[in-house]
Structure formats: C-alpha cells, structure tokens
Image (cartoon, rainbow, N blue to C red):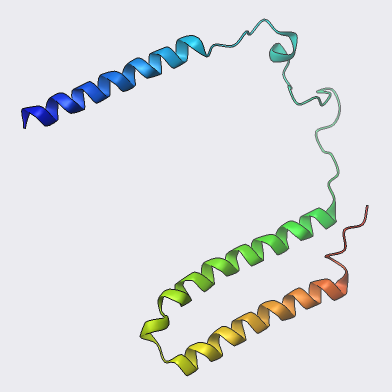
Length: 117
C-alpha cells in the first residue's frame, strides 16, 4: 500500500514540475504590436462585425451534419444485428438508406451540391 502511495506521489510531483517548466518556457512576448491589438486575425476592428456568408456554404454544412448524424444511427444497428430478425433488419436498413438517398437526390436535383463561385 505504501508503494502505491509513493508512486502516485512521484507521478504527481513529476506532473507538477512539468507544468511549471511549461509555464516558464512557453511565455510569449506581449510587446509585439500584433499581439497587443484586439484582433489578431487580420480583420479591421473598426469595420462592421456582420460579414455576409455564403448561403450555399451553409446548405453544404447542413447536408454534412445530416449525413454525420446518419452515421450515429447506423452504428447501433450494426451492434443489434445478431439480436434481430434478419428479414426485418434488412428491410429497415434498406428503407433507411433509401430515405437518405432520396434526400441526397433531392438536394442534387435542386442544385445544392453544385459549388459555384
């Protein structure tokens, strides 16, 4: 029991020393003109904060999120494959993928997937 206590104490001391060394050696110069300015990204802070964004980019992001959520719905189906009826399971998977493909076809036919500048 003492050995575990001593090992954990040594680990904590090493971590503490590493954190102190990191804070000492990683300090950056705050006298730099760019670092002391309110915006480091290159935008003029005097201009308006409301910049227009592309609605097309927003639609692509929403489509990506839909297909990303679709992955979270498909993964549990794989885990429950051995506990369910194979015919019902196949019909459910085919129906789910059919709905996703119909949504993709609709977006494609509406032109939301064409990236035009």
